[in-house]
Length: 166
Length: 169
Image 1: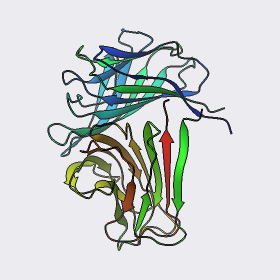
Image 2: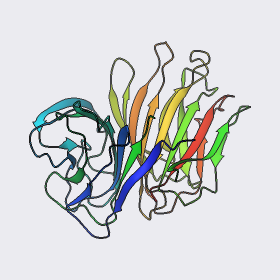
Image 3: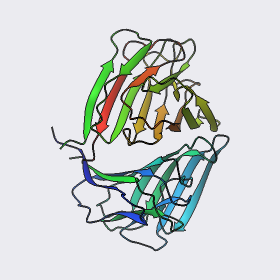
């Protein structure tokens, strides 16, 4: 049986770093999935940037619950994708997944993230975000980083999987 | 190398109060569980409960976001099990089962274990839910066993539980 869910690359930080980068992503899959587990040096949002595009070509619609209320909102013309609606902890690891559909196609790119930031106390959330990158370029690189420019702490792991429909 | 591997499955041929996956190998990076569940609990719904490592102390907490077709809610819970919330109960539409996916990343890492859960019911009636849960198991011990149970009822015949390992090696 053909393998349809393959690891493309993985990074586990041995020391703190400003980002985790996946480069030279092959165009041979249908969809991509990124799974991130980790903490930040300073509490901040996990962001993703595609093909090193720093222009305001990104937008999203989010839905989150924080334990008391359910909230939905939008971000337009921003410079990256939120991988979660809640800042990451400095001590308790949380997880984010990002599915990127038809990443090698010539249409705008859609991402769907599910984030679980349950810290046992303080501000914690579960959230779903649908994101758009207004570019027709195939995605060949992905950067994961803190929106505040802080380091990702040692021990964080990010894995990029390729999913084949054929 | 296959990165998404079936470790074990259990499709119930008779009702059962619990389902256990034990001796889970530590050779994967993440675990994924896919469950299709109905119970004989009185009412249209029941809760799917999960424990790791046979640990029934109050080390599990969740943040839930849930919609019922009318009013979304969010709530926090800290209890002695991971509450994966709604599945179908005895009076739900016949032959319907709740679907639940549980993602446990870095299940062997010496750190608290985050968990992401997505659950969905749809039974063409008024009492069905869908939602997402952020969970945390505050233990540094590698997960080697997972138990499923209900609020005190039984899983009915046809309920299914699949455990997959995802390897990034």
